[in-house]
Image 1 (cartoon, rainbow, N blue to C red):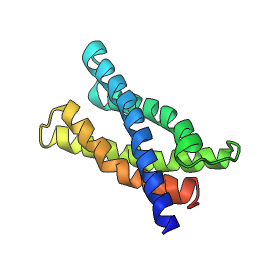
Image 2 (image 1 turned 180 degrees about the vertical axis):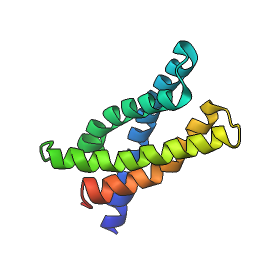
Image 3 (image 1 turned 45 degrees about the vertical axis):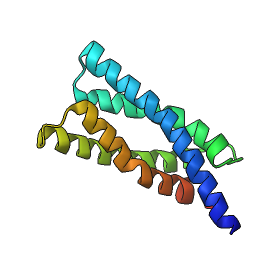
Image 4 (image 1 turned 60 degrees about the horizontal axis):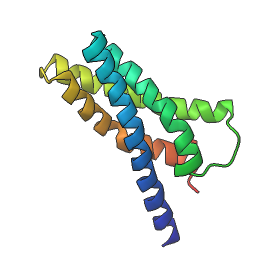
Length: 131
């Protein structure tokens, strides 16, 4: 029962941190896309990076309460999870906008939602351990 509670707590915290990181991601994306006129894939990439930079310390300190110091190994694992997520997000975005003519603002939200589960599984069980 305790393991299920920890999993639930980690997932709930991950969703909260993910919500914060997603807001940062999407605001950067919209600002670059609408205000500056940056191409949608570049704007999405910049937004994604901003979200990852916000999410890492929050996930480490609060979501998983991972006490170890930040090492290259930890950063590499986290970066790998989010690189996979980034590639998946860009693929979803490209397909939705390029083939289905979905508005880039909507397609980006769908792409972010698509990668949430893989991010949780990667960070919970590989990056920060299964505590």
